[in-house]
Length: 401
Image (tube, rainbow, N blue to C red):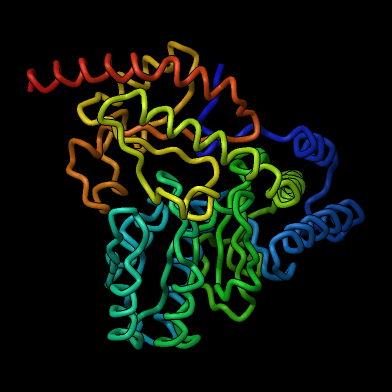
């Protein structure tokens, strides 16, 4: 099998799995006061310190969650509700139009509570329009509770100008507006330093880095007010109740450390493979289009994540394309979310100006730790015929309806 869906999930690191199994075999709730509980607490806090150190944070800023979606929700909904309680006039939650659904659904949920959801447009490359964001913040700073802009897009791999976002929010809104970034796709792939970023909060997910699924974290400054979204016994600074899974936390620490330590070497390895794959597809498949930042600025991975190749094949039936690739032993994904088995047009490409038909004809190939030059060659050998077959299926579907 050729696995090119690392943005969806990546293989568990043997060292992370070993750490998980070792700790899972031990007894002790970290909230208990007996010796087993104290031992578990010590392991948990050591894991928290390791995560913090690797990402430029303080251990007290690491709030463990069940994954990236929960971390996003806690950051956006928790910060917005806390801001509104302190100042009922702060009703606006601002984000980009290309965010992960965890953030988009969070701002819409806030709107259902009487708040205001503001989606800032992006350019054709999927990068946020900073002028539009600045105009929004400058005019409505006193009414804004939270701004959330992802570090890198999960579909196209476009890296967003997070530093500029933080700067303009601080210039117009000071520290009264919380700034969050969904860095689920960025951590371990591009340098991320929470302390230096100026952000109030940052989300990450373990299974994107080599930890088992079911663990993530929200890095949140200690001065950031957060209203809890999971209620209970007050674990994790009182904003994320529930028994903290020590074994998963240990595995996350191992995975984060490994991803950060190997980042530059892995980036140097993946960028040439990514660019070879993208160039090969464009040369071999008529009408294919590469989405996201392209050109010299992206050549070293600076404008786009080092492992992302997001393509549009106009007229192709994406379900047929994925089926043909899977039959050939290639695991990939559509650049669109699937709801109840029905492929939806990519909201990222719609926001970037694509029409609905093209936004349905997309393929996301994401490289990772298992990817080799042979994998790239295999995809290039199979993809032209697969796209032609998918376009034939698309023509049949169009005639039928």
